[in-house]
Image (cartoon, rainbow, N blue to C red):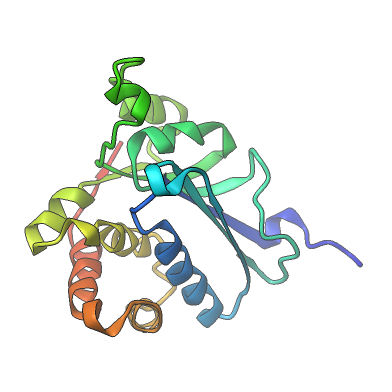
Length: 203
């Protein structure tokens, strides 16, 4: 079986901590690219998610995708729901990767226990490695503005959708409706629009 060429596949790595809705966001993205006519593979990897541990979702799309797991150094888009978790995966990115990162900071247990300090300048580290390709989204603030911090993941998805102008907004909303429970659909549509229509800071 002939493997797909690397340039035929786009790799998106979502990362954050347990409870941030990484899996839900990954499923929305997968549906979007499927609707756009691509082959899709998705994989979720959980650390100690129930204790706020590392959670990632790998989303790969293209003409033909054979493996659901992104190899280290092959990430085209890094979507980080928490800053330190984004930094954890900086070496997984290609040199020309696009980074979208939330302003959310959730200190791990080691920081809370005083064993280490939360890094001071994560934004600067990303800017030095990917100048002009880093987008900082105030997803926490936007979610609080609409009244529910739990919607910060969908705010970030809304902002991320702007990086794909070839995919119509309605495709994203259809995917959202298919994945999000009906009881919170209205809130999440508002969160998506909040992220999609508000500007983000490019570093």
